Length: 616
Image (cartoon, rainbow, N blue to C red):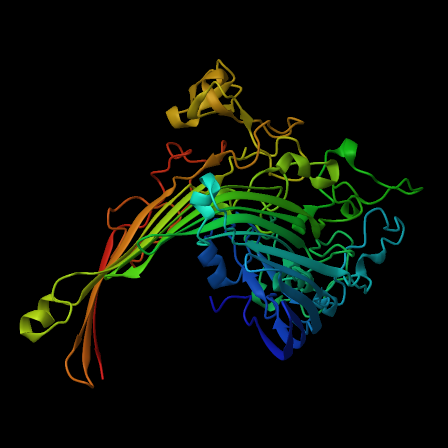
């Protein structure tokens, strides 16, 4: 009831920018130097439960709505509560960003041009606008006072050594004879190669998540419990919204950043050949590579672990149970920390063929064969493809190398064809017949692309470490799409949920679930499957009629997904299309008949739209 509890939120950023570049030509050299100076003064409202939140649950034989009407908290399913977050949702991430570059473009002769440069960038450290942005480490809580550096103000170290070189070579050879002469004898070919390094800046959510984390914000709740005396839970719940924050605790969850967090950097390189062909055709063949280093990642640095792995200080008086977290550092709570643990590698062969617009026709075709590999594609979870923000085995126990696989953004094959064609009849649109029949233009885009990587998950916390992020066992000899989950009542020890929980020999299944608390995770890697690829054709048919010098009429027919192919992950252009869902790939919890069934998610259906516009 009421508007969302995370409102108001938003941001205002005022940028004061100075840019200038100076160019000086001397002989065959073109020197350029420049700078960018930017002062950003922002005001950010991060989403917290500032106004308060009342949660009513069932209890005492009454429904949630009945308990809401009578103002009883109830207790389940879920927890009835009255909650309010204390701390300011507003913070001011100011930064001073400055960059400088110097470059020389040297035309050594008519055939060879060299470009050499260097750039320096300093992005500022806007996360330091948060009172406590940085993670303070583990095993530093006093077991007597339960105090420690987790609640103290701190800063993230500035990153001030971001130098980036650039090198480019363009060569237009002219050979006299032989095969090379046939290919490169007329100076209609160019060989280009280059290398560039650059840096990425912090993005807003890193600071925003830290601003809403403990100790910067203290979530305070009154919890409803059911007892014999209070079968409907706590009474008069709406009057119990907290008015003062509870004391901070090292058990509070934190989403902060590494105190040594730096700007990620990338390296890019390429080698390509461009060739002008007869008939207004141009062909471009290239190899392109890149490497991302120190990319942003999210790491669980204090995971849940079995009792034997928890580290608890030895004290004269036993530590109360309510002071223990059940985590690696048993005196601290969840620590999801943004770090520079990510890396990526990309290699691609690219082919581009273009026919310039002539005689009413132009077309461009592009094909890319590539591979993008990383150990974590984003610091957020993407549910539709089961992409987890953190590694299955926590990184503090060496789990990141096991995550190295094709990236969530990998598309091995991609082909795109775009075209424009002025239909050849009555283009001048003379007379009534010409204005009705002539002047039509046909345009379109055809896209063929490999599907999105899909992560199969176990659905149970098999190893009891780090929460429910484990993957199942993979049996390469099993039948694709068949799963088996443990069941003690089965004669084989396993059942198939997609066959009315009938017993199944686990060797028949490709994906084998591992029961909770089994002490190990599965052998399946990350992103091992893919969703169906894109096979899409969009087309437009349009014409423009000049009625007078002041008036013209435009008609346009738009055809989306002309062939009506299922398009996983592409929302339909129709406003009436159902909300799209992902392919279910959870061994334990996928509904019967839906495990790895690509037919379940709705795709973008064929849509035809007509537009008529009068301009004057």
